Length: 360
Image (cartoon, rainbow, N blue to C red):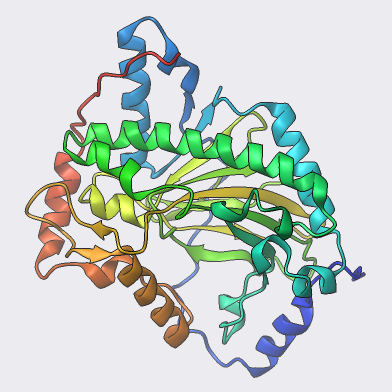
């Protein structure tokens, strides 16, 4: 196995965990289904002159968010030229020497690799990333020698932000409540993030995760991935392999939207499996609120108790620190809410179809 000076010491860290591990307390391995296609939604229909076409598109978004927690969008307004430029700059960044990435404070000193808190191999992620606050995307001081990345990344972040707000608006209107307006009040560039991911080829074992199974601690995530594949999600208690679509972006519901919607929308466990021969690249946009934002259900009786985003993040971090795993929303379930969860799931098959005004 040949490594360049750009690779983080993933093999060394993984080897150490392998030598010192005993038995990880993890669920039994689930059967992986064949590669399948996520629900595919053409967002150009939102700009149709026909109100029924617009309403059908919005309904498809809400239905996929309830039944899958994941969906794909095409004609999303982000040009293929911008995506190609962003990918080229991303590859250039990750090919920089490891020491440069780790010690030069690039992109708000947001570089990370592997899983620092992992105590056994099943908690380890074979990947590296830059997790950048939106407020720092346009900051010249963050880019060092990577000047050409700044303009492209600024344009890309702006486009992803606009798309996230469009989708969040549709999903909140579907709830038919005052929360429709409030998401714009609690989510802005001071609270959202753009994450550049690189999953180096890993010929050691197909059992090594590129990214460990998890749910996202946000309202929603928009993912721009290459054609290598490796993303899997949990559907009907089985792992489903997501088939890449070069024209599509992937959208998934986060924990906060599940709590906010009282389980109308589903935050689904997902992971990335490593590839033995080919590097994988992706970019994720995370729509997050301010830390002091109150997360509460839009209806009563609520499945989850009220909590702030800060409280949620702190609980997640504490669980990861103590156990190596994220627990997430189950920590915030109200007593007796198991019955409510079943009732809510049954009632959620009847989704309200919002009225969507044509896009200009």
